[in-house]
Each structure stands twice: as structure tokens, then as C-alpha cells.
Image (tube, rainbow, N blue to C red):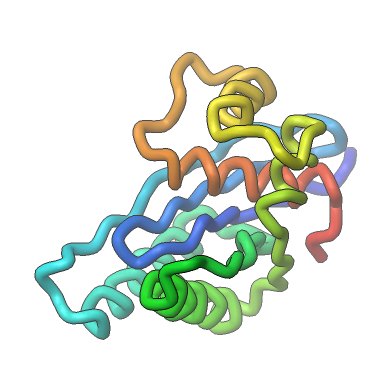
Length: 162
């Protein structure tokens, strides 16, 4: 029997951080769990980052992934948004390091190419393929969650994750 691999896919963000755990065994891939961690703009950035870490740590303990895959940052016109997302990514990478998880990073283009066959696919196309590939009755409520599922599927399909 082929070994089981569980990949925790992350779409980083401070206001909303999407996460998804996919389990693969050979060519078979299933969704073990997914969600969106939301933090309040009424709280300080440091408190919000601590909340992200605590929630990620709990997800890692609950789902016991064997690896993590994170969407790479792309340069944005809004520098302050890029900095905040970078801070959230730092917390994600710290959570992985603290849990001893290997991490692979994928560009949005690579994720889209892996999931849809087209690196320029729009969000709707990516979401539809996620639904088809995993046999989901409905799409996740948040785009961030769907993006995290796509990142995890990309990692499972490319088998780059250690």
C-alpha cells in the first residue's frame, strides 16, 4: 500500500488566512479539512499574529500533516498590504518550523497551472476544478479557503513536498 501523505495548504493573510489539509495516497486525493482563520481589525497586529499562530498550531496538532505548502507572495502595488501579508507568512513558516514540517512554496501561477492546466486561470475556474477534483457538493464560503485547497492540491500533484 502506498504511504499516506497529508499536506497543509495555506493561503496567507492577516484578516483571513485560508487553510486546507489534503490527504493523498497514490493518485487518490481527499480533503481532510479546510477553513479560514479570521482576525479582527480592531485588534493590534501583534495580537492578530498570535491568534494566527495559535490556530495554526491547533490545526497542525489536530490534522497531523506531513508537510506544508504555502502560496508565495507576489508583489503588490499596495506596499502596506504586502508587508502585512508578509508578517502573516512569517507566522505560518514559524508554525511549520516549530512542528518540524517541511515547507514548499508555490507561485499563484504554478498553483493555477497545476489545478486547471492554465497558469492564467481565473478564480472561478480554479474553484470549479477544486470542486470537480475533490467531488465537493459546494464550494467553501471564503475564496481564501478555496485558494488554500488549490495550494494543497498543487503540492500533492507535484509531489515536491518532502
